[in-house]
Amino acid sequence: MSLFEEYHPLTGKMFQILKADGTLVSGQKPPISDQEIFALYKKMLFIRLADQRALMLQRQGRFGTYAPIWGQEACQVGSAYALQKGDWVVPAFREIGATLMMGISLKSFYLYWMGNEMGSRAPEGMNVMPVSVPVGTQTLHAVGVAWAAKLRGEKVVALVFFGDGATSKGDFHEAMNFAGVFKTPTVFFCQNNQFAISVPRSLQTASKTIAQKAIAYGCDGIQVDGNDLFAVYLATKEAVEKARSGGGPTLIEGVTYRFGPHTTADDPTKYRTEAEIEPWKPLDPFVRLRFYLGEKGMWDEEIENRLTAEAQKEIDQAVKDAEAVPSPQVEEIFQYVFAEMPHPLKEQLEYLKSTL
Image 1: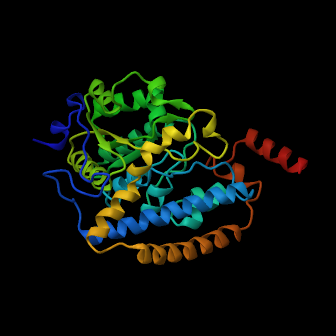
Image 2: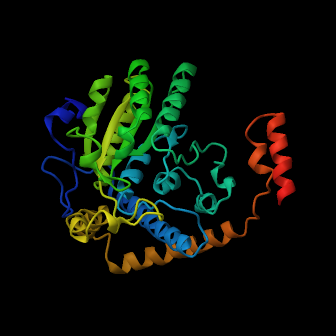
């Protein structure tokens, strides 16, 4: 029986390997080596610290509005680790984890949030789409990328990220329908962090699970513990392999929690209490990995402090490098829209330059 059959959404089962206390679910084993687990923990720690720095930079007026990842690191690191060279990541606006996993530099990531579109330019060979702020529209882009790859006969998979709120948008349903009909090699990864901005999941969809939405479109769906790095990785790996072999798309629902605000323009105290957050704190993806690695003799406070110091040094340099990049010229707003700038845009450019 395949993973998607065993954990069919209508069974009511959520796939989990690593429990909150760092022990393994009976009959399960880690899908990767302990050395890989430690390396991914180190990557997750770097991402959390880089995310915290981004929040500080925004509060200091050195960043624009920013969407933090705090609490959702396992969803992005575990899923992106399942990809191969040539595959695509199509992000929403909270994907610092997946972006860095694909090899994009922290400098480039910071540059985008500092308002410089050069931060959207992925280096050659790194298939990461730019940030997509409109909720859910990137799901359509991912299906387009995957369909193009299929038409070309390329064994390429597109992994697209979105939140639970996006599944209530028409774009998501159109994307799922198209992917199901044409069996595009798309992996839809919903980070169900329990809130669509300020609206709790219970008020924006009556569906018992988000994973079961896949059934209507003839796709596989699975609900996983989104704070379990092992479960996220294995479910995504099987979905990627299935897509690459022509088996069609999969919808993965990673059940997780957004500890911080939706963005820095949001005040979560307006719609949730600290008491609501407390039960999720022991489920933090870092807590269980520390327990697991600690039992293997691969984690302690000294190791944590060393990794933190190394990461902070690298983050400091990324901030300096990003802030040293000259501000973009006004012409750059217009230059990269069309191969040849049409007359109306030329007029707008000249008008804008005359007002500066």
